[in-house]
Length: 148
Length: 117
Image (cartoon, rainbow over all chains, first blue to last red; front, side):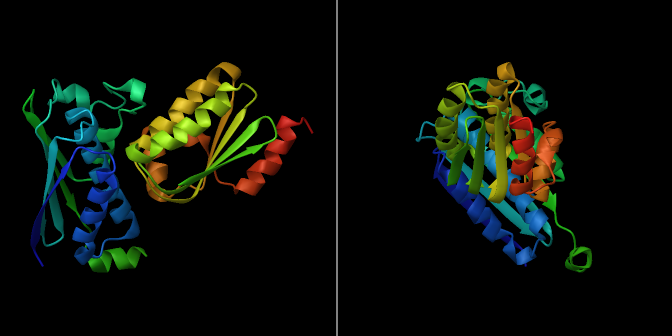
């Protein structure tokens, strides 16, 4: 039942969809509810977009790695970049805060990650990179089928 | 993938399809912005019925257009969001713009507002 993968790609926006697709397949064995799956995809999308847009300014060169582990019904995913880093992590976590309003980034990324998962840890060093580690626990299958 | 339909001078219906993320917002924005800047548009209807996925880029896209509509007191209407999308809109304070009606119902209502019937 337990599993582990690593995915590596460059900072191009078309890879956002690829990362969501791979991570959806990775959790398929857990048999998540439709809503759990769509919330999980959103979390991955937010973290990967942050790495591409803020870590590397979409340079198409920088490397992003996703390490994912599945332990029973718990998923732990780390999204790692080696880009410019976050100067002020607590400010970055504030709803609506964004350094790129001109690109219509809404500043809701971390709020969504926190709301749709059980834990979000951010480790960042300026000009060295950022690692965001997300933990999400999925409800037991019996419970989820009862809801349906 | 998306469909933009202009109804009369004042209404644009945007039917989003597939997945809306940072990558796919650029094309949609480039198509809608010139239409709004032309001046006569008063209502944007976002129909999310065929949208399978949306992240916070959708918030940025819709809020950006709301800002452009603000000077002319234009209206924003969102229909058919999924439960996950509803939550995302709620986080960003956009719940008041979600209508629990179909596109057709909204359009017949708008007929009344826009043409003063």
